Image (cartoon, rainbow, N blue to C red; front, side, top):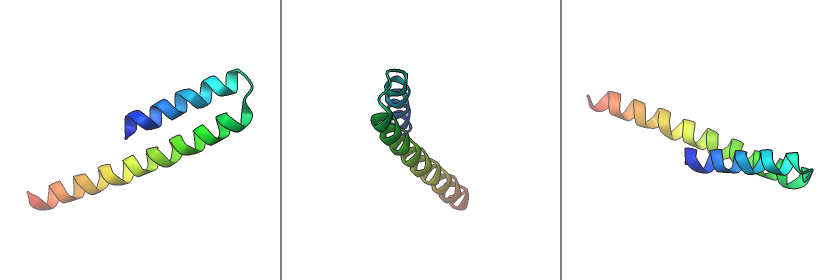
Length: 53
């Protein structure tokens, strides 16, 4: 999931360089959502692993 977030971030940066504001904005939003989903899943995994011992 982190890979996809970084891929969308790269697409957003390239689109912004070439002046495609709408595509850059959409890609940055998707990258942000994927990154936060990754963080939540990572934290849940850490908590579950800590509770299991």
